Length: 158
Image (cartoon, rainbow, N blue to C red):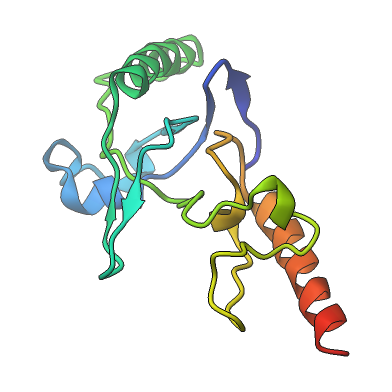
């Protein structure tokens, strides 16, 4: 992310939404060079699930919808003030950084491994974060992965 603007419950950042380019009817036929996009990264509620087959389900709550509506209005204002003419069209909501699927509990943090996991299985990504932060994730993910890797090495004499 080149930049982002942080608000209560979300951030806005420049973004080329390729998913919407291919699957969202209002965006079909509009060349990428003719678009300016802002991503809304929401601090959504932690109510998703992963079932025994690995399918992820996540409902959009009333609070999530209210934040998205507010963020969309701010994004449109930013675009207008920057001289970008409409029409403005929302993209397709999607979850790009699945977090909290096996969150660390306080007592698991030192070992960087949820105690509920089977022996020998480690997780080293945003799944360990208890809830969405609504912030850029690359540095957090890298830091988690490094810390988990160090724990694995410490436990297995590497």
